[in-house]
Each structure stands twice: as C-alpha cells, then as structure tokens.
Image (cartoon, rainbow, N blue to C red):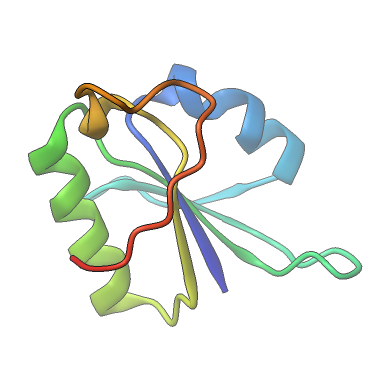
Length: 95
C-alpha cells in the first residue's frame, strides 16, 4: 500500500479527484482510501495540516496504523529550506 501526505485539502484536491478517493476518517487526520487500478496499488491520501510537526505526527500515525510500504510527502510545507525546490524529487534515507 502507498500513502500520500499533503498539508491542505486544496493541495490534495487534484490528486484526490484523480485517485477517486473515499473518506475513511476525519480524525486524527483527514484520511481518504483509494482502490488499486490495474498495476497501480491501493493506498491512502492523508491531509496532515501545515508544518513539519503536523507532517511528522501524520507520518507516525500512518506508519503505526496502516500497512504502508511507500510513503510520499507530496507537499513542500515541511521541507522549506535552502536547496529544496518545488517539483524536486528527494529520497529520504533516514528518519
């Protein structure tokens, strides 16, 4: 299973529409489930709230409550610092 983390509903809306997500929960984070299609795996889309603390909390929640093999922070709010740019792809090697 794959999980996408995004900070706001506005930021998540295009991906949520494309994945045909169904709402699973409002708390502790707004969470949507989307089905597998063809070779694309099923997964979750989680709206974390703004900032690194919210993203970290949502990450812990997703990893502790769901069988996620891949986690993608599709936003940039938690990573605003020199050297990271919108549209860039970054591989996290440790947490």
